Image (cartoon, rainbow, N blue to C red):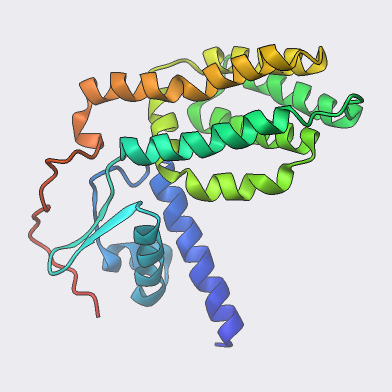
Length: 235
């Protein structure tokens, strides 16, 4: 297989595993088997191992020598760091909204909001539209190229947001999106910034609520090295 194709295959496997972690298909604290993952994906263990190494570098997977690999529990400090970055980028972008807003982009955002407010929407559909909406706001301000940097840093944040959507109705966040866009249309920067800040910081309340209900999903200083019967040897 050509080297370029190998690199492409490794990237696909990494992105697939990352998506499974972020969507909670692979749950915080879950043990990972290279063999089972490789079988499920129809590939050899090598690209799976390489994908897990990359996820470990992001803090989404933990590797314990002679024990194995586990999906990392959600780390509140990593959530806070990612939220800090996201808030800095998105609030700063609001200051660069042009006086003449792109009518086509505004129409796309309005359509997005209409779909967000559908009563039949599920968590994953809403999450995808939420991402599209925030990226669209950056595009409206001329800073869309900053979005990949934000995305690459917010793995723990995205898991916390998804967990929050399991207990908080998406309608709450959809209404905040509407308020943000209304403020932008009115060129009311102060209101847009205040609403955006409240919106982005809602995840902290979600975390506190979830840690009381499901503490096993979150990292803590007392976390011990996990123990399991099957052992993955990293070569």
